[in-house]
Length: 404
Image (cartoon, rainbow, N blue to C red):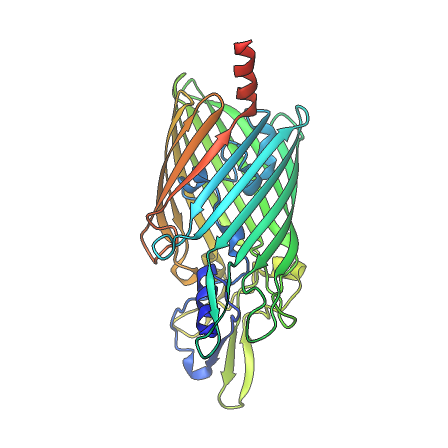
């Protein structure tokens, strides 16, 4: 049935066409119900690369590579190489289908010692969907897809500090025009703004480095699939710290920690007063403009319902922060072991998972692998192996020079 297939499609993408919760005054009994934030284009929030994917989805302050375009464009002027390319592949819902996947291409090039430009392409294929009418007759086959095109610029302002901006075109076609109401591909544009700071240090006579990053991503217009409604994309704020300790000439370890928050309104509770039959909101109206939504996202939650009937907005706002921690060990800058953990509050999505991975770097290319083990709700990436292939063009030039 067409409606059934559309519902399955919505569930696969993680996108809700309706976020209203209707309660009566008799329902407000102190239960701590979930109230997750809903956005369109979930592609924008999926970790595309295997290095960060193996470290619990940290990345805003870790050492730079081509995938910094996703995590924090400001890191790129501090990358070791003058240019690079990364290609990533992530199977999605592998336990249910074998034709749903995310592909990611990212590259960068130094203009000079201070300036770097970058580009990227993300492509999310949701496999083949067969649409039928109410009688079960096949209407057509369609492959839903989403993709983004990125261009970015980063500038080193000092030996320790840099900033960067990115522009992004977003395309999302979920139904191919088939539905109860006339639908269309969603399109919008967005931007990123990032800052990065790194400070060389010493600990116990050993060289080390402390880094900090701040990144605003996907700040842009709403997206629409019909003429009636518009939906927020996952505008996001991420702050992170990373510390690298060089144990000796061959061994180094690093720890990284990220805090993440969506800059999107929390869905209010639509409550009904049974005495007056008047509907009212608990929380803030989420039908607002993008600038208002960004600021409102810090104080608009309906609040956690306490035992005495009062509501704590601050408690719910803190629940909307996600936390990631990751560790990485390198031997001779050639072989890496990684692990991490991601936590999301049970009322905001309940994602909790452990990640593991390995990495390898040679003169010209490198490989990263990541594996995710979910320990809460079912995760689309549970027990899935992801990989990223890196190319170092500076290494290629060195090899060519040696051959000469």
